[in-house]
Amino acid sequence: MSEPILVLNCGSSSIKFALFDPGLDPLPRVPMWSGRLEGIGSSSARLVAGGAPPVAVALDAQQPYASALQRVRSCVEQRTRGLPPAAVAHRVVHGGSKYDAPLRIDAAVLADLREYVALAPLHQPYALQAIEVLQAELPGVPQVACFDTAFHRTLPQVEQMLPLPHALWERGIRRYGFHGLSYEYMAIALAERHGDAARGRTIVAHLGSGASLCAMHGLRSVATTMGFSAVDGLMMGTRCGSLDPGVLLHLMEVEGYDARRLSQLLYHESGLLGVSGLSSSPQPLLAAEATDARARAALELYVRRVVREIGGLAAALGGLDMLAFTAGIGEHSAPLRERICGALGWLGLQVDDAANRADAATISKPGSRVRVVVEPTNEEWVMASHALNLVHPA
Image 1 (cartoon, rainbow, N blue to C red):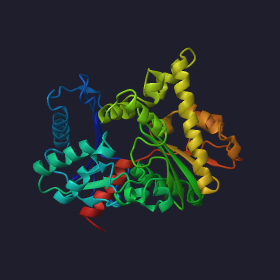
Image 2 (image 1 turned 90 degrees about the vertical axis):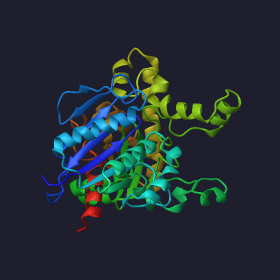
Image 3 (image 1 turned 135 degrees about the horizontal axis):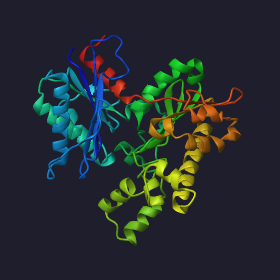
Image 4 (image 1 turned 120 degrees about the vertical axis):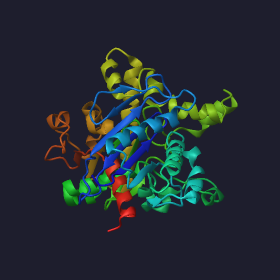
């Protein structure tokens, strides 16, 4: 085995990892081995790797994340028999206005990225911690940052602007967009599968625990729902999405919320979980909605927010040729796809019920004015490809 490329996607409660073999050309889209350590910070942390049954993991209660990183590294070393990686690719959620392409990380880059921690608190600090640990423990191995904001650097300026004083624009207060690694893959995969149909007016719905939409034209981002931070836009699993700023002022002035309490509310206690009081995942809510009014309301609001934003992006595109669903909910929740598409019939969109239930690659009827498709995303392969190109350029 040649030295593998290690891909890390570090979140606040989980670390996903994958190994790719750079000795194969082209780079395979399926990793040679992958896994995740989840439940970090809880008493039920577990490791799932290579299709084996989950294994309970005891982490250091004082430093759970550092302990989790060490466990992941030990697991990877066992798999590679001690062979060091050729490079480590890190998902870095926020690259700010400075970084618009993947790059090797040095001390100056790392210092810059710390400035964006407050804008992506669920991911940025944990990715940076992993980078720091691996820089110290693997000093000769290139560390590569792959930015979730980079794909959206093609947004026209009017889509980046916020209606605030210009001085704040100059200080970087603007709309950046996120989930860019997923959308970058979708731009590749949709063109391969659907050809010129994907190069027209396309909206991609990345619906997972985090959720956003991206309007593409010519396979480039021209509008998106997430903005300055990854809490903007659609209603998500635990994040609220777009919110009247007057609510925040009220919570501070009347309810006594400070910044820390607001952050906890907006990122961890809202969305499907907050409205339903039951779950941040649609599946339990779908099972309970017949008898649970809050579960039913949470799903109705979720679908309504997606539908309204698709309508807005279709207007920005001047019409719609393709709607693509991806990520965990988008790829696997036929009931939510059905409800979203059912509310978009005015666009000339018609879904084939059997194809939708089967999670088929194309779920629209032949006569549908808008082609509706389901395409699994592959952020890990995008990151591995970037690392390979930086370490061994063609």
